[in-house]
Length: 339
Image 1 (cartoon, rainbow, N blue to C red):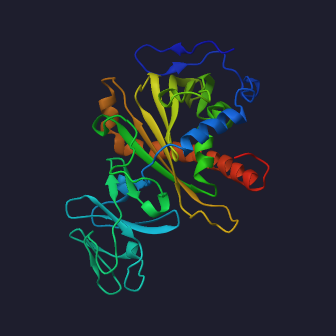
Image 2 (image 1 turned 30 degrees about the vertical axis):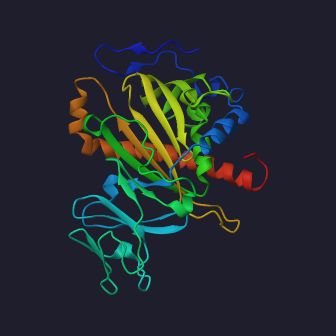
C-alpha cells in the first residue's frame, strides 16, 4: 500500500513516499469487467446528439483561412464570415468539384479558385450550407443526413470552466478504429496507471455505475495522482461521464484544479461502409485547466507557452490509447471481442 503523498506547504504538488513499483500495483482486471464497460458504452451510444460533430479547435479556423475536413465520409469546408461566425458546407464546389479548402477567403466570402464562384454562407448554385457552431474552444458542424437523429439548434456542449479563467488546449489525433472504440477506452479508467504510468499513479476506481444508474449518476469516480516528475504528483478525484455517443468528459471534482475538464470527442472520418477496411476516427480532445489559486493568473498569462506542452502530453497519451482502440476494433471485426 502507498501512504498518502506528503503535502508541500504552499504548492499544489505532493511528494510520494514509499511509491509502489509498477509491477507491484494491485491488478485492476477483476474490477474492469467487460460487461460493466460495455453497459456504460451502450448507454452512451443511446444518448441524443442532435447530429452535431466536433470538427476541431476554434483556433483551427482563423479569419481568412478555410479548413477542410471529412466527417462520416462527407467532405466539408469551414471558414469565418465577415462577422467572425463559422460557416460550413460541402467541401466540393458544386460547379466542377474544386476542393474549396484550397480557395481563398475575401472579406468573409469564400471564392472558388477554379472559376470564381463566391460563397458567403447562403445557398448558391447548388451549394447548401451546414449548421456550424463555435463554442469558444471547439468548432462543431451539424450533418443531419449522416447523423440521422432529431436535429437540435445547438450542439450538446458539456459544462466547462469559463474560457476567460481557464487555460485551454486542443489535441487532434486520427486512428483506425470506430468512435465507440475511443469511447470504450475512456470508459475504462482502470487501465490508467497500468498503461500510462508516465502520467498516472496510485489510481483507484472509487465507484462505477450500475446498469440501472440514472443518467445524472452514470459516472466513474476515480482517485488518481497526475505524475509531474519522479515522485512529485498532483492527487485529485475525477469523474468520468459520457454525455453523448461520441463524447467522454473527465472532470476534476476534488483537489487541485477542481472544475477542470478534459473533453474527448470521437468524430468518424470515414462513412459506415468501409468495405471491410478499418474505419478512421479523429479524436479531438480539449483540456480546460482552471484553478481558484491566485497564482493561476500567471498560468493564464503564460498560456501561449503552456498550450504546446498540454498538447504534447495529450498526444503522448493518445498515441497509446489509439493503439488500444485500434486493437479493440480489430478484435471486434474478427469476432473475438464483444461489441
